[in-house]
Length: 114
Length: 106
Image (cartoon, rainbow over all chains, first blue to last red; front, side, top):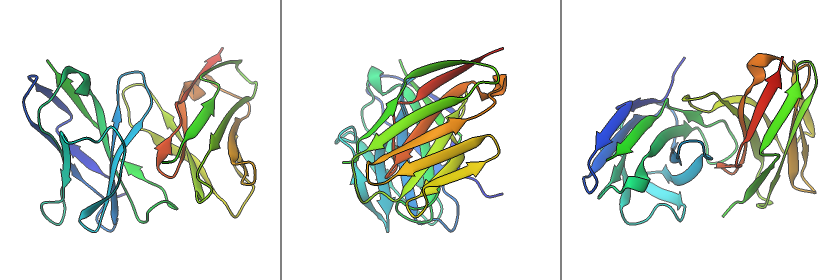
């Protein structure tokens, strides 16, 4: 069964450093998403991406965040200058369409900022 | 953007009893309403979903009802078992509710 894969599974970084979280969506999916989940809290929408551009973003997704599809398979989330409060689980997801079909989630990347 | 409200935040039930979680949404254009189960340290897993052209859907012990006029939908778990203990999230327009921690007491 196809699945969304994320790397790394755990990333530890120093405050102020840049991190790139990587995702490989399911191959025939057209919509890609990043979510954030701070430990014990809700799953928060960050951004959706379609046709090589951002289609929606939340108020959390400020200038320190960016997304990119650098090639035909990878989808990345970059955090430019990490803060302690960026520590969270980051989930990538993909779907066939914008809002009417299941979004499949990767296993997540646990980001720890120290 | 879409706002999804979910209640209750915690729910404790006796094994064998039923559990009901309710969600409301704001975007009238939403047509797809999934429910996810998340176990500790794992990704959200889809357990059931419903589209706006139906009012109810059932899969074994799990059912979901949708009232599109009132913009609310509910998850019903019958004959609860200890393995149903988890956090459950509703979603609409790719936005998640705040989650319900369900504890099934043996």
